[in-house]
Amino acid sequence: MNLTERVEQALDSMRPFLKKDGGDVAIEEITEDNIVRLRLLGACASCSMSIMTFKAGLEQAIKKAVPEIVAVEAINLSDFSDSNIFTPPFRG
Image 1 (cartoon, rainbow, N blue to C red):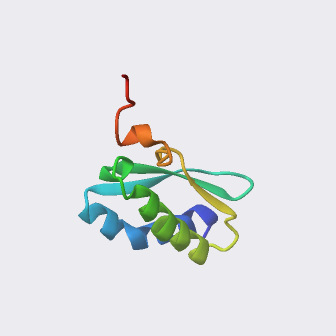
Image 2 (image 1 turned 120 degrees about the vertical axis):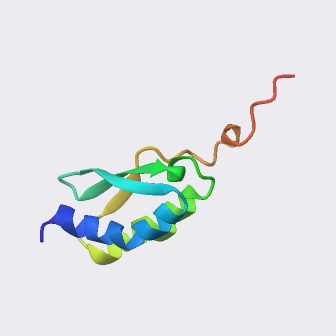
């Protein structure tokens, strides 16, 4: 089984949970440096819990199943340290 197939298999273990909430995930690319770039789909792309889903679920599942992966990134995950995501900036 090649690297992409192994990463897909790890993601398949998480997909039922994502789909239950109206979301999914797709591999955008796996770099030559063994970095996996994912795209969160559906409800996962905009959910306020997506950072936890990504870190505690997807990233851990991939790293456990495919130890040669050095990093996992979500290319469309919002920066939740930016408070403007949740509230519009004050314009007073």
